[in-house]
Structures are given as C-alpha cells and as structure tokens.
Image (cartoon, helix red, strand yellow):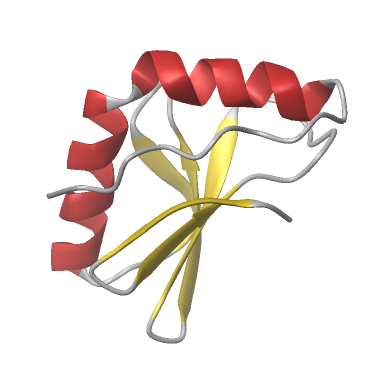
Amino acid sequence: MPTISTFYGIIIQMFYGDHAPPHIHVKYSGHEAVVDFQKMEIIKGSLPRRAANLVLDWVELHQTELMEDWELCSNHQAPKPIAPLE
C-alpha cells in the first residue's frame, strides 16, 4: 500500500484498486483508521482526537489531489505524494 504523505508521526496510505467510497488509510501510534475524504469523516477504526483533527485539516486542504490519487490507484497506478501538513 503506497504511502502518500507523512506528518507528525501520521502515515497516510491508499490501496490499489480499493473499494468505494474514496478513502485513505491512516496509521498513528498504534491506531488505525479509514477516512472517507469526500465526507471528511472516519468510517472505520479510530484515532486520538488531536491526530484525527490534523488528518481532517490535511484532507480539507488536499481534496483535489486525493481524488487524483484515488483515480490513479483505481487504475492500479502509483499515486503521487501529497505535501504534509505544516
């Protein structure tokens, strides 16, 4: 599963050919979550509140890039890296 961004110990990944809805997989300090980036909500798993807020802030800033990466992964192509939250 390609890593598309990392920041503050948070790892953001996407699977090739993954199921709908468009989403990212997030890992942080032993926690794992799946985030629907169109609805901007955690749909599976959990993250500490601060990490969840950072991820959702990042998602809001990178909606277009996330959708482009989703399309690439849907076609079994490598996603492009996305800038971390600063």
